[in-house]
Image (tube, rainbow, N blue to C red):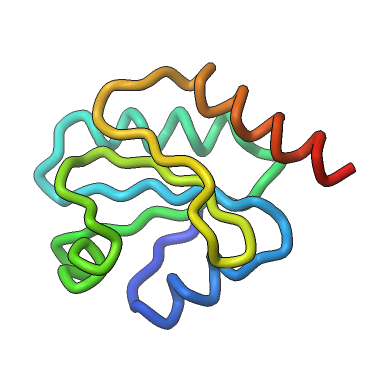
Length: 104
């Protein structure tokens, strides 16, 4: 999983022509680390990244992310799906598979 450390790096990462998954967290979030690990292990067919919002505070405002963990699926710089705080990996997988099938 890629660690994104700048706004420019984030913008570049989400501009991919293939879907990407971004996990937004904070350093003191107890539930974020297990979510990140599950995303990293389960979704190997796409690129994944982690953003610590306490390091990139302007990004949380720009994207209106007020709760963590938040997991988003992006394609060509567009947010397609957002999962906030309580969600299952199955939900993410269903949405991701829908995108990948559409792209075939």
